[in-house]
Image (cartoon, rainbow, N blue to C red):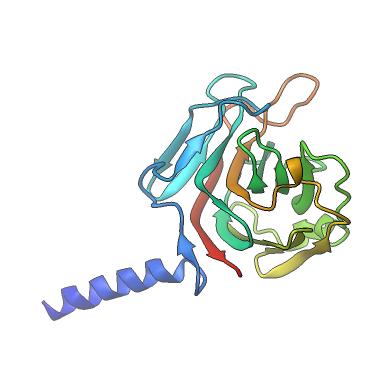
Length: 220
């Protein structure tokens, strides 16, 4: 009995250690409760969001049809932490303060030729000119064929955004003004599977993006 108790304690401790101290899980490792698929974004509305062994997986349910999965809750100032494991040739992203249409400050997870992981992009936002000079070196810190830890922080009416990949800071940048749609200062967290077509090849057939241990820490 004592051995069983110790094993249970160890298992619970291991699960807690998968997210940083002070963070709260927003993905329950079992299903999509607390999240929903956008039907109005320009990437598509793939229904191929599945959960297996605690991993959130997404692929295109038909050629070209990507999409985004959003939290039901909106957040203002926060940090989000997650682990990612995309297949090479697949373009995804982590959206901060997203609208239902997917208008957001995006942390890129563009795991493909000439792609970038950890840089900031204005998804359907005009005027965003982020300093991604350090993020262009992302491959130095990337663990190939393994899980990689991504953490992003956004705060302020004029967004100050920071991004870390496997503990190395890639971005520490403040926008010149709030370029969010309608000047929004809060929004949803989302993960993305990019659309693809012959002109914009951003997803390999049968490829997946994988996410796990998604957690958030709300800030003042």
